[in-house]
Length: 569
Image 1 (spheres, rainbow, N blue to C red):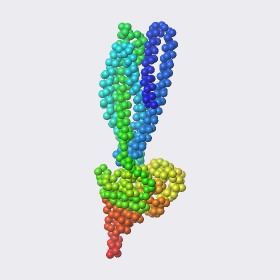
Image 2 (cartoon, rainbow, N blue to C red):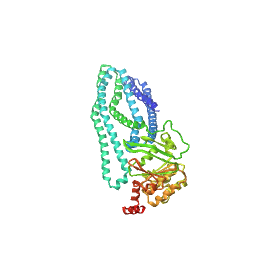
Image 3 (cartoon, helix red, strand yellow):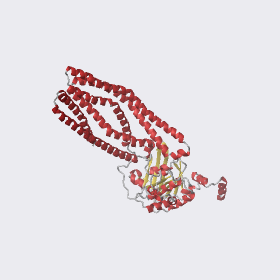
Image 4 (cartoon, rainbow, N blue to C red):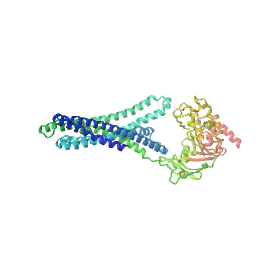
């Protein structure tokens, strides 16, 4: 459709020569030659040509607009798919605001290029070349006099093009910075208000906005330095046409009708040159935007399904880490980690902040790949699992909850769209969320604000827990899920988790001893190394991190410890 539209553009631009030629016949044969019998036929031909040309131009715009919209739709879908398939490290490297700019502003300018600039460039080239050839056939001397300024115009525009490209790259970066600042401020609006930092954020955004404003003005100032020369040279062609053309009529080299052709079509030579700077601006901006889109379009995730990946009929939930080590940006996170969790058993992981607890879950779900060692699920290396099947087998509820702008039921059923309302209510009950959900204005149909705005931290955690359980995963991961809950609610949830209506292996990451003490095995991570492992009873006997944490959380003083030790002796 794009090619058909450009072909029509070529035809429409070429048809511009017809009416000036018919005008010359009108002047020479009717006005000067007094032969009125040609008047009506010439006028009819000119009218038909104009109607046909307008109709074809209308069809051309429809085709180009349709082609550009289809292109943008398909490209946006492709970019979104590419982003969804990227691993976690990709989003650590790229700012959200920048990615949003690529998906919106940059794509829109690519569409603008396909819809508008392609036919503008085609029109300019066809008009210039066809008019030049037509002029040469009429009178080559006058034509050479007209185009004598062309080399100088091309030199000026080439200089401008070289200078303006870095300015457009800088402007694109300023736009990305401004969008990032706006996105972060909107997403973190509650934090901004909590710390009364509105004035600071406003100044920060104003600075980004000013930088973008200055970058745009810089491009305009640069264009205005070249514009007077380009405009003067383009207008100079009209003066040459009248002056030199008048001399040629006096000498009898051309007729009045032929001079009328030159006068009426001089703009077809001058306009492409006059608009060259604007077209160069748009083309440079297109290249800048297109490069940003191409970076995403051709970026390929490092974590993908291998060609030898196998399907599994059923996931049992047998997990084994064998000498797993991992570094993030050359910083060691996990060192030689080994453990095994049998199907249906519960593993608890405890340790200080930054010890690598959450990274264990990320490696299991292949959000990242191990640096060395291997992770087995049901005896098969996770690298040989199909990603969709692997991640579908793991239901995760984290401390940092993300809820979608959807109903409560829609959030609970996010991972299991076949979930009935009764089942959603049941999982909400198991997550101790049913009571506060029932009090909401429309119960389970209440729309939750973006990121769960309006809910407390504990409420969001309970909905996230219900969402994780609702997929009936073979592996249930609770990453500090009950940190915002009171002890009574946590105890109720622990009872429900121990009595789920489906079998699953559980991995519980927590800071509270009360959350992990009933696990089949507890491992203590410190600085990426397993320093302790065993059951609650075994670890409480050691004088390590686990026992110290237990004493701190249960407020056991030094005197009480001394009495306890004396009693033991």
